[in-house]
Image 1 (cartoon, rainbow, N blue to C red):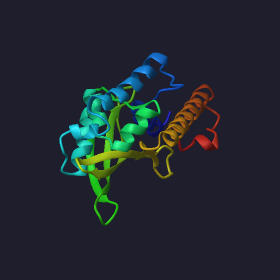
Image 2 (cartoon, one colour; image 1 turned 135 degrees about the vertical axis):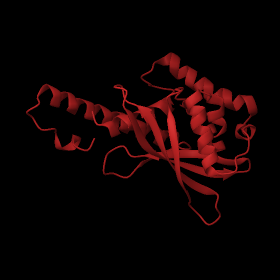
Image 3 (cartoon, rainbow, N blue to C red; image 1 turned 90 degrees about the horizontal axis):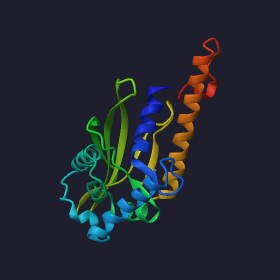
Length: 213
């Protein structure tokens, strides 16, 4: 399968767990929902204020990556915007920890999206390993908004299909986020099936729709 599709699948599915219909089963789904709700119950609706204030968008993203790498679900929840934290919990979703010490990242440019300087995009590389051990990187753009306690994450964007614009995952809109997660999974399945067909029949060209996946 194409490396880009594999890493996109890893980035999206490693973070977003559905409370209903998730392939990981009812026990993991219930745990995901409980984790999200527990993060709110611990500190109330403004749980994000329990995290140390952040001085820049890049600092918030770095903390977020570190929490993903170390498996600190409470820290992840605290670094989301208030709306993202509440909406994901109320809709049975969890912005889930990667929980892998192998996860690496590199931060790139920070772009402020308005004159009031209270919205920003932070470019980064999510660096992980393919099943064969090869290190591969995927560009992820984090969407942040400045709240009273500092910069907090509202979503992310990453390229799913080569040649297309990055797909935005808005953590504050769980229904849209789930639809896009399902789209990524369907693209992954199509790419995998195409590659399996090519392996079984090496003389046949890949279907046109699978070339860039």
